[in-house]
Image (tube, rainbow, N blue to C red; front, side, top):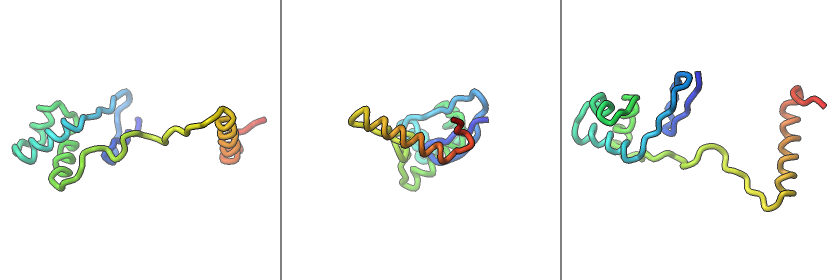
Length: 111
C-alpha cells in the first residue's frame, strides 16, 4: 500500500493503483456552504458533488465554520529546485552532494 499525504495534513492509506483526488477551492467552499448554510447532510453533499471521502466534507465544513482557510499551506510540493548561474557551480554542488551521500551511506559505496 502507498502512503498518501494530502494538503490538509490528514493521513490515510490508498489502495494500490488508486489515484489521489484533488478538489478545487471552489468545490471545497461549495461543499462547506451546503453543509453550514443549507444544512444538507454530509452524505448528501458528498454524493451531490461526487466527493469520495465523506469525512473530507466534514473537515472542510468545520474549517470554514471556524474561519480557517481551505487553501493549501503551500502551492508547491517538495524542495524547491536549486538554481545555478553556471555549469561549474552546478557541478561543484553535485560533487558535494555525492560526497555527502557517500558519508551518509558508506555501505552502499563501492569503488
